[in-house]
Length: 211
Image 1 (cartoon, helix red, strand yellow):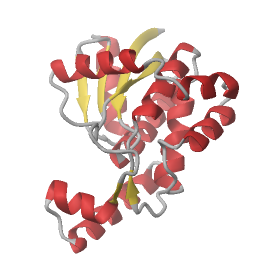
Image 2: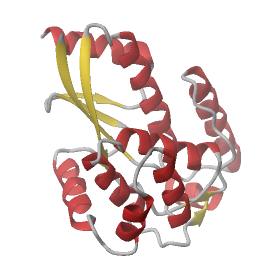
Image 3: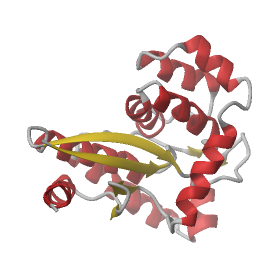
Image 4: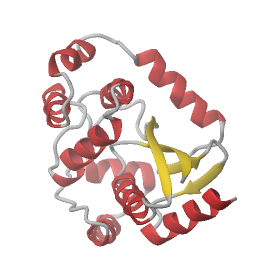
């Protein structure tokens, strides 16, 4: 059986990352008897300078992307439709938050072998339930849900542990040209950009495995 190393570069704040992860996991389920995959999550912040109070979603999108309310509504409808196609249910999101603490916890979860599960839980908490993925109570609840030690998670969140590691990984990907997410890198050299449909991921993984 072929084995692939898959880096999933993403941000919890990114709705397309929720779609991308769900699509990738569907593709991996289809090729599971032929291809083994080691998936690890990598940090990327869409809003690295955002304060802990966050920002109202409509005003933030208008300021950053110049979109009107109608354009935002159309984009969100498309996102909900794409999410439904891969089994991810988007709920109301009215705020954007800083996600650095989420990335610190994900960095630790990677060491514990629970990063993908925690990523999935945090994407659901924010995009499905509209909760703040940077709030410590939300992070601790998600950590507990996926079997992580919540006392250890709390200790991490109360300090700056893993901050330098996260910053280093963020720089690593920016220096390699990543400007948007989701961004998937297979075996350190094959890039798949964007929230591709499951069949596109599947075809790419098969081609890479057979190369």
